Image (cartoon, rainbow, N blue to C red; front, side, top):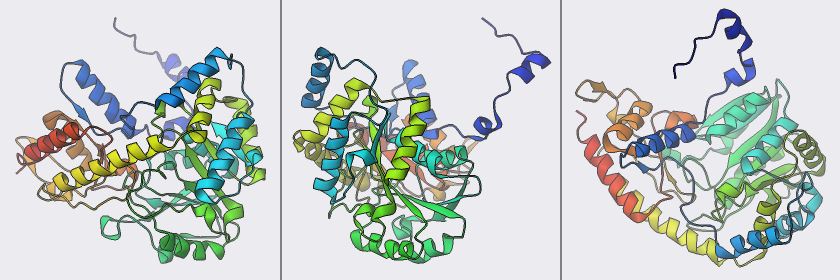
Amino acid sequence: MKLKEPTSNQSSMNKISDLVASLSPSQTLAMSQKSQELKAQGIDVINLSVGEPDFATPDHIKEAAKEAIDNNFSFYTPVPGYMSLRKAVSAKLSRENSLTYAPEQIVVGNGAKQALCNVILSLLNPGDEVVLPTPCWVSYVEMVKLARATVVEVPATIESDFKITPDQLRAAITPHTRALLICSPSNPTGSVYSRDELAALVKVLAEHPDIIVIADEIYEHIIFSGHFTSLGSFPEIADRTVIINGVSKAYAMTGWRIGYCAAPLWLAKAVSKLQSQYTSGASSIAQKAAEAAYNGSQECVEVMRRAFERRRDLVVDLASQIPGWKVNRPEGAFYLFPEVSSYFGKRDGDRVINNAGDLAMYLLDVAHVATVDGAAFCCPGYIRLSYATSDTNIVEALRRIKEALARLK
């Protein structure tokens, strides 16, 4: 059925808000959707665009969800989450990260994404600035836009292992700086700040006691060397650090949609107030499953971590053999972020590669491998590959990519 074109009056009536019009759609989700559309057409696409573990949720967590259903956990939940879950999160933060957050300082949301957006909307005003090391996750900039605040990018490159320096941080801070938002292990690069590197940044932050530190630590358990250090573990900034985390990555629970913020009490109360007006509490069943994840055996986390480490070694080895790509060795998460600008200006017939977006679309159309343009992460000239997939898929995907790139002259 052909849709009718809107009349001039309808066009005016259907106009969306300037705020929503200013937002960019998620390019990671868009590439994943395109790959699914091609698969529906019978095309064998290998999707390296989505940041989602390919493992099933561990059995003991699923059993807890079934038990919750049988025990009639089917009613509205408290806005900040069940107290039993918040106690489990508080104990986890103390046990694993040496952090002291009372259950009242924890607000459970519908995924870490909502938890982070809640914090940003509760914290920022127009004119406020957020210092943001880049490359960064696609939604950070858009969330700050929602708050009508301003992002101050601090760029890092593959030569610095995608990590900023204390001097860069100091130079980015102004009288308008309200927050620093930092992700380690990083999406999209997999880079991990060591304790010494974080301590050097904390020295700068100690000079600015009004800056709130937002630490996105959703990938904390997927780390391949050394030990994970939480920014909240530094006494100089502990009382103004917000932790963002959840169960999606460590426990293969992306669809369960449970994340949380751990924040100063005044901010946690504001987050709960905000959440009460637009989603209320998170799913009762998913919360009981998350409780089991935190309170149960952590062996499943280590099994998946070892698999990701093996895949990291595999993808780095294969990607390093692609002519023209600059590749580093990520120490966490499940992403590779190669620099690919050597292919800009090359062509395959009438098709010209002008930027990383063109290259990503070329790889999708020709190699049938879905990746993501680095510009989505505030870093043109790169593409992101997720290796949260099987070894077989990684080998085949990199073979296809190498073969397709060889056609560009």
